[in-house]
Length: 121
Image 1 (cartoon, rainbow, N blue to C red):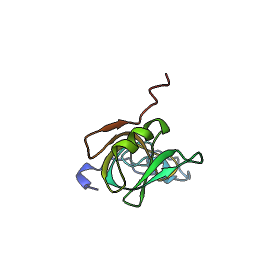
Image 2: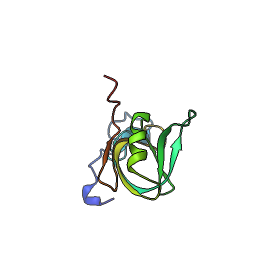
Image 3: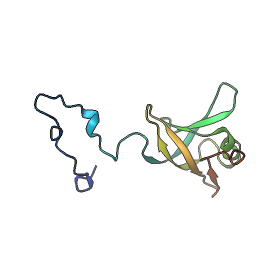
């Protein structure tokens, strides 16, 4: 992280009353808090399937897991193949190392809208 871009965070004990314990999670940097926007570029290692054998995600570079809503999976399977590079825009999970895809830009120029199911209002 570039020090010049580091947000000015309050001293961990600044708001504590005397004798009060400090909790590190109270002072997370907004730039690294779960649920923040995320952008990942990588090669598709494999598609991930749910219990119904529907594609519901992909693995990038063998390490980054991305969740894709089932409604977007069919278009994604038509537009991207294992080994191709994609750019994922989405949000980080609040509990696990996972990104929820909002859009997926494929090598062939197709951008898959994975944000919501167009059939649902």
